[in-house]
Length: 287
Image (cartoon, rainbow, N blue to C red; front, side):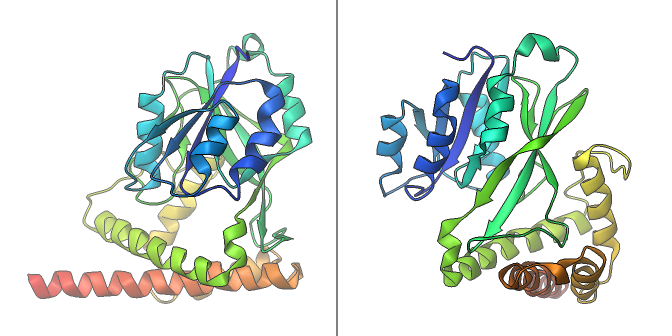
């Protein structure tokens, strides 16, 4: 058994994705823990087939689900790796993990993985989507889930972090081949983000990370998010979409990826701003 790290994976009806992920990591012989939120397909059976330890927990949002997972699984290894069910460890990243020895990383508390995102079978290469570095590996008991987020989940760790630029996590949600699934999912996401932004306006939420354009990848994102919240509602989606397509070269992407940039970078952002305005109007009417 791997003595260096363990895997935690969140699931909900992931029979389409979970075998892919578990096959990509099974040779690492690491303990695998799966927190399921009520799957009604073959997810649990697949997890048990691969020897994973499974717990069930009602899902409220991703940050809270990760918080529960980190606090309720008895991780015995010095490092923890948190993965999404629709991700795959590539052979290059597998090699890095296979060679990983905890004693060689005594001064490091977190490691960022490089993600390659696919939409409907196509790699999203431009538009700010590559490279994207995600903190996925951290010291057990030191890394934690950022509960100041309502939808986007991120792990945070104190101390020094490093980036593995070689090797990738490939992320592709095959359910999104059905575009209706994508729209329904983002309708739900827009509700969560709109509520979160209104709560930030009311000073009910703060940023856990200190915004720093020259800091680690998450501190850079915190700086950009702080800027985003200051931009005018209704105008900022167009500004963001234009920046993504022209300055981040989204126009040079393939046809499917360009459609993704429009949907995720403009349509979705406009929907969020619309729902923020609705929540603000309700708030003003109630006063």
